[in-house]
Length: 171
Image (cartoon, rainbow, N blue to C red; front, side):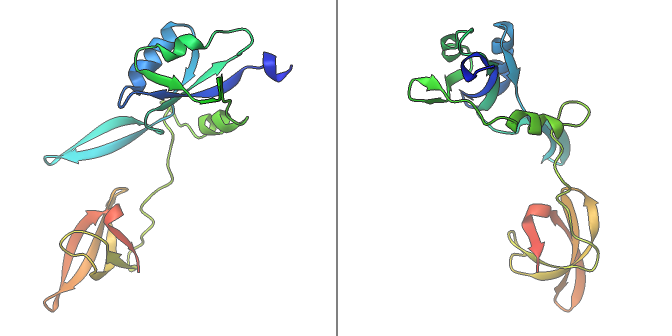
């Protein structure tokens, strides 16, 4: 099979926050489309909600055979800005990229990230942001993968504070 007759993956640039809309419209047109996504929890107003987000904001991928299929209709699809091109031809992704992403999916079709919270009780940490910025503390445990409890020495006593994992780093 030559490159001209091969099914290759191409990146499609979407409008802001319209990846899922573009995905649906491209699938209705008969294209094979892949949108890598991940699930995360967001906290707002003391509530924790699970949301699905695209792994690459404003991008999804379409599998095409440029010799056999027309690709210009992708540009006018609802939710799509353009297909990524070099010159006047779409630029194919290196082989194996999409397959590597798909191999990292877990049940439900989401990409699974490594555990962000690598702090163990007793580890020294420094607070990066917030009212306790630049304070040195000791890890006291984790409430979940997104929050960590640390002990800070404030006014001569140990105070337990729970912060986002992104707000601390190893000292």
